[in-house]
Length: 101
Image 1 (cartoon, rainbow, N blue to C red):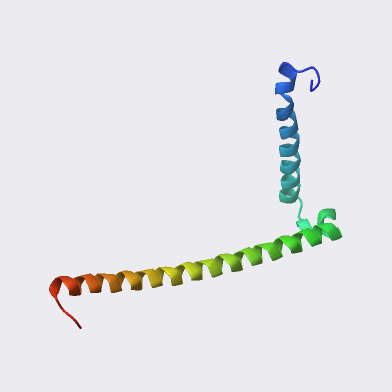
Image 2: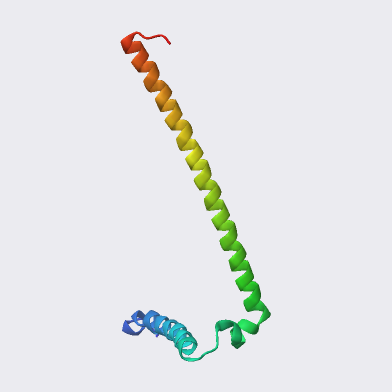
């Protein structure tokens, strides 16, 4: 179908997608029916699975820290902008009213 082109080629992506979806649903169904957790299965015992879980956990922690730092920086910048706007507003008000504190 891939080399011949035509209508068969248009359906190949669907066949590939359904195989992947079926595999994921099969694993989820197995984990839902069986009392074993993912760590108790062969997937959880492999060194590569543990390493992937540790790397993913570390990446999530790093991303959470970066988001927290960025939020603090944005909050600080917003406060600085608010202070500048307040100072500018006071300066304009003083010019209009003629007050020179």
